[in-house]
Length: 193
Image (cartoon, rainbow, N blue to C red; front, top):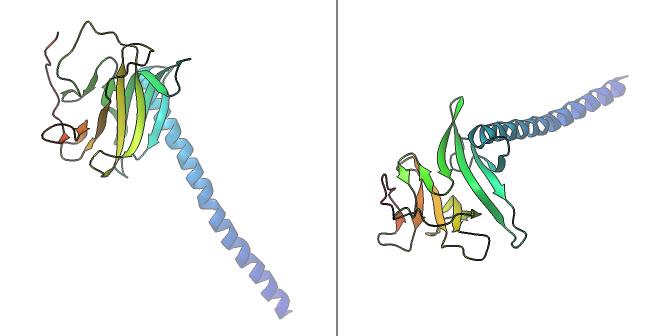
């Protein structure tokens, strides 16, 4: 009798341990699905019903959910990711704010990013987009590289690397190719040519 009780207790103990280890995996999966839906909702609110999410997660701060939303362009000539619009959305409290807006130009809350002037005569087809996990200075960071393309041919300009600047609390251009190297200030009212 005692051995039967021990066997039943052991089985219940093992079962309860198994149930506890399986259940958090389900919750984590549910959490990922909920975050994915939140990112897609934010993307579509920012860019419309055709928006797609390229990245969703805690890209810079473990406490801040971010969504990289795009309107994709397809190219039969080239492999890669091409977009006509892009927005990086950050969830602040219960709402979302737009940190970067990309269409013909790149802008954040402080101004235009990655330019010296606006060329109204230039053509715009899309940006070629790439993501990196290290900045040019070697520091581990979320980086988005945007190369301006006037048309679908091979004429990409040098990419603008954009990363989160903790000191300013916004996305900015980061480069090692200028003096001084590092984050670059935005232009609030760039000249037009």
